[in-house]
Amino acid sequence: MSNPPKAGPLTGGPPRFNVPYRSAQSPRAGPGGLLMSIDDEPVTTLDDLRGDLARRYKWTSSSGASVDPTIVDADMAALDNDGYVIWKNLLSADECQHIRDAVAPHLAHPGRNSFEGRRTQRVYSVLSRTRVCDRLVDHPRVLAVLDRLLMDNYLLSALQAINIQPGESAQLAHHDDGFYPIPRPRPPLAAATIWAIDDFTADNGATVLYPGSHRWGRRRPGADDPALPVVMPAGSCVFFVGTLWHGGGANTTAHARLAVTAQYCQPWLRPMEAFTLSVPRDIARTLSADIRRMIGYSIHPPFVGAVDGLHPQRLLDQP
Image 1 (cartoon, rainbow, N blue to C red):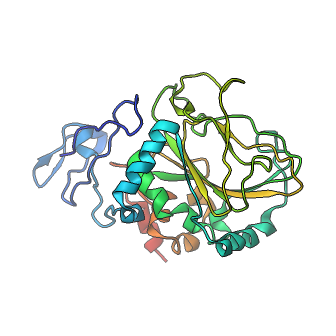
Image 2 (image 1 turned 60 degrees about the vertical axis):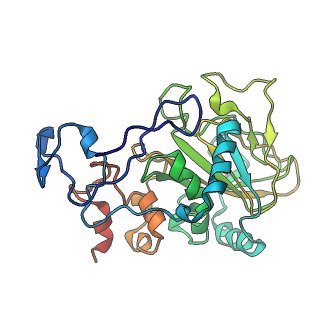
């Protein structure tokens, strides 16, 4: 049977579920929620179905399991206190240059509104265009935190390249899980990374955070709330929870500022990007197991994400 709910990592939040997965001999529900059993194990409530019912495509731990737990403890403490954590120099200069070269041909059109940025270029569906950003999506340091923050089989919600050009104004302050209509205060439903491909400075469009704002209720940032530009060298990453208020900064320099953002959400929420539609199956087959899981080739127990009543991973095994 599954364990009882555990308290969430961010103080003040209600318990969250992070339950272990069952063996292949777990019960399966019948039509209309009727009582069924496998090997005489009864199913009496939906809680009995919170484990892994898959027989062939069993859940496995992410690459985040390779990170020293004491390092993850420190990251979680920073998230609990401030709502964000900064990791410097995770990418080399060569890796940053490869990303610039790969996304440059797709940087064509500015944003469609002031939120996207009239002088900001965005590349959506990055996974369908290049493999150079895969390491950002499934970086072990990121997944180690997500493994604790969100429920198992969390999803990739968006992957974008964002190029803030000279003359761009500051973006509207927002929190990334604000489009889910669940009132605050509450634990985060999502989390995001922003990777600096160019240096982030206070005047070239560095993301502006409101430390501690992940604990707020319904109020928006005011003029008296301290705001922090995320100044960090190229190759660095800022990770923040979906309830933290933030926004892109103004670019008053003569040079553009390129970043890549990967956003993640709970496995029972609809992601911003429909990756199972935008990423062809022949490309999906080449992705890491972690990324395949995060773009929708996974199940939130017992049945969320199934295809024809079966695990979606089977689609990638078909010719």
